[in-house]
Image (cartoon, rainbow, N blue to C red; front, side, top):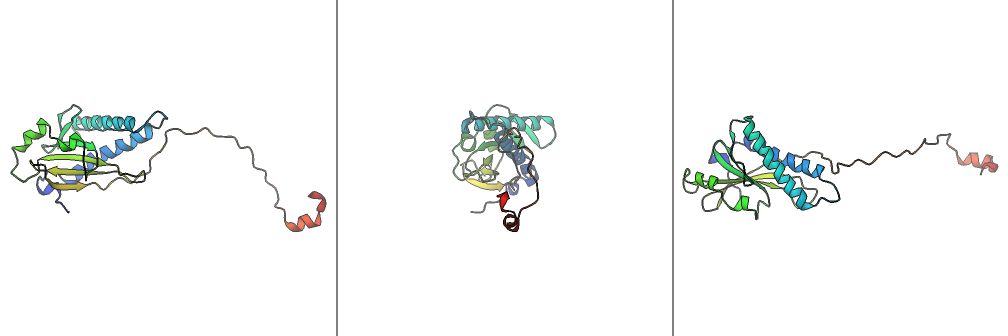
Length: 198
C-alpha cells in the first residue's frame, strides 16, 4: 500500500531534512560495524554501541544549531528530537513488523503533540533503521507517521547510502615474499635441444 509522504500532513517534514537524519543514522551504523570487529564483539555489543552513537550524534547536531529546524526535546535514552516542531524518535527495527518501544509507544513529549493535530492526521513519528536481514542488504531508513490510534498514515523511505565500508578495522601485517625469480621463458624446443638441463 502506497502511503503519502509525511510532508503532505506536515510541510516541515521535507525530504531534504529527513535525509539529514537518515544520513546520521546510517553513517553511525557503518562506523560501529567498522569499529567493533574484535572476537569479543557480537550483535548485542554492536547494537547497543550503534544506538548510543546515533543518539549522541543526533543530540550533538541538534544542540549545535547547524540546522534551525532540528531541536532536542528530551535527551535521555528515549531521545526525542523535533523537526520543525514535530517530535520524532528513532530505532533499529523491522519497519513492516516493529517490536521496539521507540516505534510502538509514545513518550510524554510525543503525546503533548497529539492535541495539536486533527483526528486522522499523523502525530507520532519514528525513524526506523532497517538494516535488512542479509549481510548484503544496504541499510535504509524509514520514517513512519501514525495517528493517535496507531494507524500508519504516512511513510518516507531514504534513498539509502550505497557506499563501500571497511568490514574489519584490523589490517594484517605485510609478509615478505622475497624477490620473484625472473628469467627467460623456456620452450619445449629448448628441452629437446638440451636434454642435460632436465
